[in-house]
Image (cartoon, rainbow, N blue to C red; front, top):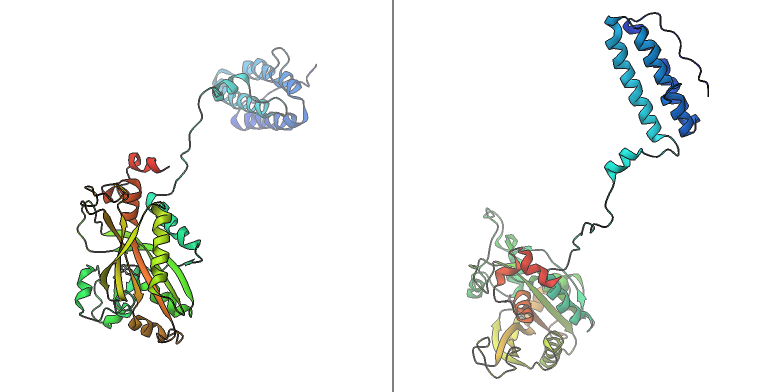
Length: 364
Ligand code: DAH
């Protein structure tokens, strides 16, 4: 192939050089997409007739000593441009050297990306919720920063009532100018969502409410200032304590296995009357008595009771259908950490919140 020759250079000042090289650059840019890669290579880089060979042979050689550097620099830039164009030229693909630099060893193991997994607390919470979903319960949530009214007053804890002291409450600071029922606190239980639910919808209601709660408790093996509960509420005509017992007995068997027995012990909560603590037969010893159940054969797991008429009276302020003469209901509340600790044999509640992957990986 014979190349069109490069023009002769007569002037070697900067401006003349710029013009001469710019025209070659433009030519190279126009050739790259127009010529086949091998033709482009021959035309520009061919050992004998390549244009770059001509440039170094004619322009560089002809340059007076003081202009050689300026020509050399421009030549280098032009050469890099031509090399780059050749690499990117259609069909040419990268050079061998470029390929080698980028080569990957496909026999090496790939980068393993960790897939997320449910935290054991979330998993347990979902499991509890699904037991009740299967019974036709809906699922609700409520705010973690709650008013005194919902957390306490509407749950039948009157102001100054000693039962408030059993729930060491974390309150939001600087609210002295607010009416006491409007003061904000971190909810100490999920029970306030009972009231929020009843205000939103008339009976019948069947709902479970999973969520995070806070208490000013010192942390130890079984206490954490942040923990989780699942609340339950069922309101309709003719709901009785038998319904409560049957529902919770079924739920405990679904969670811990069908061999588990339940029993109901009298207790007190301001928002239920009567109130009960639910115990299940010890899942570790089957009820014979062991260290975990303090030799009693029973483990206390949750609180429950029939909704107190005083609670319905608060709900009736917004939804008159909550007339305790016409409807009745039961409620329950359980601690998720406690249930998860039993199900998975965990002895330190803090393990859930420490973020230690050696612990968490066991639940993947
Ligand atoms: N709110 C109670 C607590 O945090 C748990 C509880 C007991 C909830 C009895 C209920 C209930 O709905 O009926 O200790």
